[in-house]
Image (cartoon, rainbow, N blue to C red; front, side, top):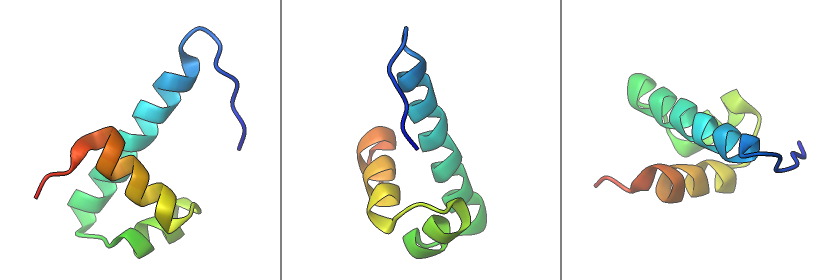
Length: 58
């Protein structure tokens, strides 16, 4: 999926995706692998979004 940054919409999309992934992981006690499969994205994308965009909580 390619998105052009127009007036902050790209940032809004990234933040929304980060929240959705983090929420799914917490609510379902899901692994990175399971989350990637459900959202049809790579494991590295899930890891990057959750650790950098949301922040590592450990």
